[in-house]
Image (cartoon, rainbow, N blue to C red; front, top):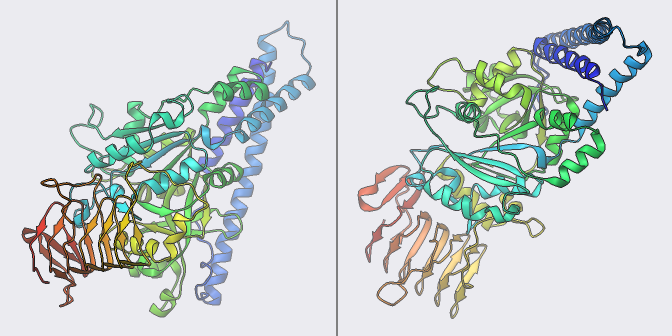
Length: 565
């Protein structure tokens, strides 16, 4: 059993260590990312000088903090002895107890697994320019046939062993909530005994006034202060293992309290083992770890957060959120546009690991006004400025944030045509989504499908061609229909009208480079190819919108026979 005085001594050590982490400043930039033109000789010398200064400063802080640690432990032990005259414990025994306490705490820290991590999935993003998000959240858009965008990050978490997951919603959340509740039910985790996925809508409160969340960080802060992110899973096996290794319920409680929270966006496509992400976060001793994609071009970097990191340790030296071209060139020390275009940027994936002991502190202190509060714009810059240790986790595989209609459209086509996104639906990966319980798809006559995905419950009639396209569930194509680079969202159930199956796309119809939203009906002899090459046009009164050259047939509309555009 661990003595109370050794536990108090350990508490002092922990306080000093946390104070040291918050005092250290590491804002100097590292060298230019790999693949970028090297700066001038003078610039390299200045960068190296600043880097050496940061390392020397960190070394001085570490040495000073180590001395304070030892002094604090000795002082606490002596104070305990003076307050207890009858105690005869030797200084050697007290030192042994202190070492045992420290070792036990470190052992507890290493025991943190993905099943113990609180995972917060941000799924409330709005996109008023995307016609597919008129009645749904971005994370509820279909991708790859039967799946929704949110299924991909949720699959990453579940396959990694996560068992405490919260989905935070706000914008157009009805279809998202319906999907999540059916795709990840309580039965999946032993009726909440072994884990859970809980949907938390945004709300108003006395503390925050009559306003909704004003950003990702504000949303998490509201739920933290409301206590809605404190649900615990019930796991007898975990408690037995913890007691066997740590020896006391007090250490188990401390281990559970001083855990980790992973925060991630729901509108992103990638495959990641979060066990590796967590292990690196714990091993680095960081307060915050950021998922970092290593291969973004200048055009993408201006819409994301750009980082400058130490190539050896992964420590983040500086961070700028959504810089314009001029600021990006200054950040990367590029003097010409050619140099900037040749760069490969390290960008923020919107995936974070926070120590629970610093998460709420960062969220509260980084909020400077009531109009906007984001992780990338406010929390991470604040952490770097105040000397918290911020590290990075390299992700070099496919990663695509879904920010617009074009992002969703191109990701769908990439999955269907064996492009870069096709790895997301590989045969060796388990995918989780809502079961539809549909009959198999039927192909009649000489229908042709090439480089495409056709979901369950579809009917493809004679002489129809589906090329480089995605056909969603329960879609019916009439005879001699031609689809090329088309995304048909489909519907959730089989459609019957007047006792007969009405085709979603009528006979002799040609569709090219377009998206057809759910429950839309396209008549016979229709041609939608955007032959004039229009880039942007709002024709919602006529049932369609053109965005960046992509024609979107709005949900629930009926396109009459013979329509041409």
